[in-house]
Image 1 (cartoon, helix red, strand yellow):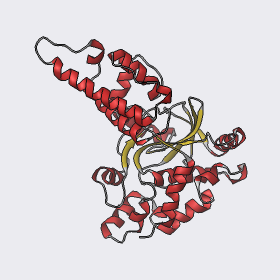
Image 2 (cartoon, one colour):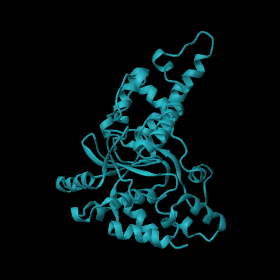
Image 3 (tube, helix red, strand yellow):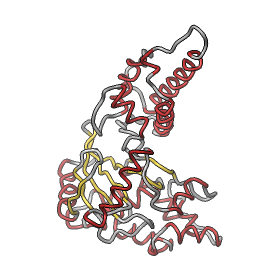
Image 4 (cartoon, helix red, strand yellow):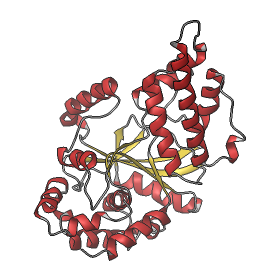
Amino acid sequence: MNGQIAALIQSRSASDQQIVRDVFRSKFRDIRSFRNFLKSTLQTNVTSMLHAPSGRWDIKSFHALYIACWVHHPLEKGSYMIDLSQLSEEQRGVIQRACDRHLARRKSSHLGGAGRSAKKGWAFLKGYRELLVQMETTKGTEYLFMKAEDYGTGLRGFIPHTRGYFHMRKTGHGLTASAALNTLASAGNPLVTVEGRAAENYANGYKAQLRDVLKLRGTKITVRDMLPALYQHARYPRPGNLANMSNREIGDSLISFCRHVCMQRGRGTQPGTSIPKGMSEITPEMISDLQKLAKTLKADGDAQLNRVFREIRVAPAVVDSSLKTFYELHG
């Protein structure tokens, strides 16, 4: 996390270097070429790129923005959303036009669905063949959404896309695109932490809770939309003014709710007792997904983000801080 991936890439350990070869495409196995790509493409950092005039934007700009986010918060699978709220409307228009000019249209099942492909020249992580880019708005805040995909579009990508879709429907998570990255995320490494899954698309239990229990529809329902409906359905005391609560406070509230439901389930097995109907519909799979979501919310700290699920939402300055570490860290 936070730029520490530089330590792994620079490590002289034979086992670490094997991990680097197995995870990254050739340009990104050497710390010098990795750094040079980001510095030259971004003109040092994310803030600089986001403020760049239209003439400085091309498809590599989007590649570099995704890679900068990955350096900040390495993922096996998931999505990043860069907060654009500090940019002027004119500058957000520059980015939108860069998407339109340099990225091909493609279908997307994510959020608003107006997908763009940054596939050409995309060669960062092994197993990932395309970069999906979308301009998105959540509760009035604009974001640049990016997600690495293990398949492309068109006829060549149809079969793996279909296979992945049904696997997602069945298990709640996508197929493994990189065995090496999956191992790094699950087994860990003393030099770097890689998160396994952090995406905006709902896990199966959470999706069933929204759709079947709370009767909420759509791909952009936020946690702050969901929480009052959940507590009301389960007849659980609603917290204070939700609008004034930080994501950490919402995470704490959600953890307390999960504990309460588990306790009620335990009591409901005793003779002569039963669980309230609204609470009995909250399944163990839903509780598991809520607990993971609560952990993500707590990690957001004092921010008041309108999170959809477990996507990585980042402020440009925070990613820039991680890039500084990545540029300066010596093995």
